[in-house]
Length: 266
Image 1 (cartoon, helix red, strand yellow):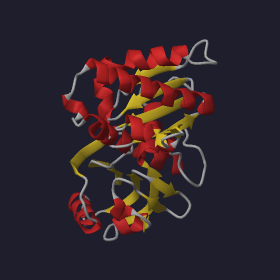
Image 2 (cartoon, helix red, strand yellow):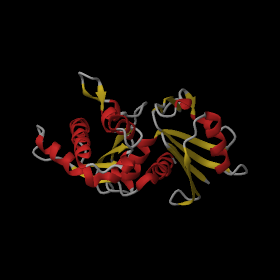
Image 3 (cartoon, one colour):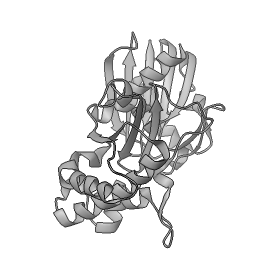
Image 4 (cartoon, one colour):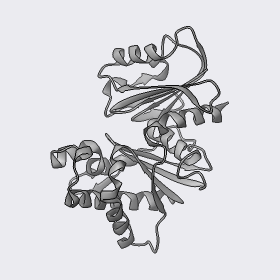
């Protein structure tokens, strides 16, 4: 038995699998506000009498893959400085892995989604925060810490980051409305332009063959994606830019990536 857990800033998802190829059960619930509540929720999904071959946990934030520790989780502060084993302390398992949630989603998109035919796949999620990773030849880069593209600075005079300008949290603060419920073309055009500037830097630094955009705000792509592409086309030094596609796997890409991570460690 295998378990893939995705602890996002807004929602937590748990998938159970017998063969690392498909899930026989997927549970979803709002991410709790306390660590004890999270432990209890996860314990309620994982079968107490089952010994797991491996468990993968994706967490929103800054993780140390060697120590298997979550250093900093901006949208779930109760996870700060927690070892991954603490999250499933009452569960029997042989192996356990910690990874940034967006990196797992990136891996899923590179192996099963819009990036599966490319060797260098960049994935950017625009949801509660902004995260992502570059996947090279179907593998997460072997670094001690994960990438945090959402925290690169786009406006040095105000110290505004990619996440400050393009996350769902920022959208609510800037415009006073929920992005899921808002269709004003002028606002989404501004959003699309900011996203274009962020992706410009991603392309320069990572040189992907394709960029896949996911997260809850990607569902509004018909309102902003053309502006994003127009912005990229206007910036130097591009004569052309990589294909930009919307995630095909939706919100389950994190737990799908968790299974892929376990496969790669087997």
